[in-house]
Image (cartoon, rainbow, N blue to C red; front, side, top):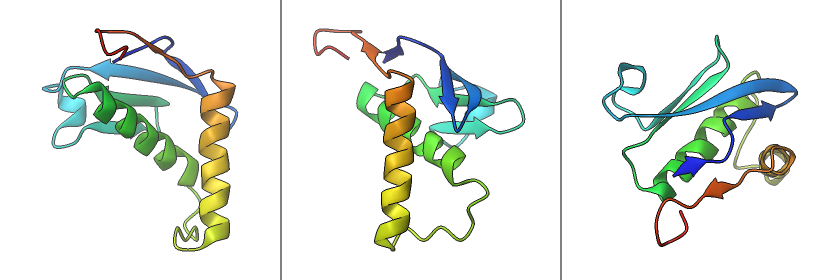
Length: 105
């Protein structure tokens, strides 16, 4: 997966998204990481594109729920709020993916 852009606005804060090699020390034992100090999301580039997209969603959700310790994903209202925030993040940033292979990923 190759993102068309590497700058995201999440909750009015600019974040950078970097796809890096799997052996990179910043993402040991995981497929991605949100660096809250530097506003960078790291995604392991050695995974299939579908898993990279799932990881990006996962890391963006980490950013969205930070400071919301009372968020309960078993409650429909809390889940709806997070879903809207995630969709808003992707829509505002015009998330799109550049084709890397014949599947269009």
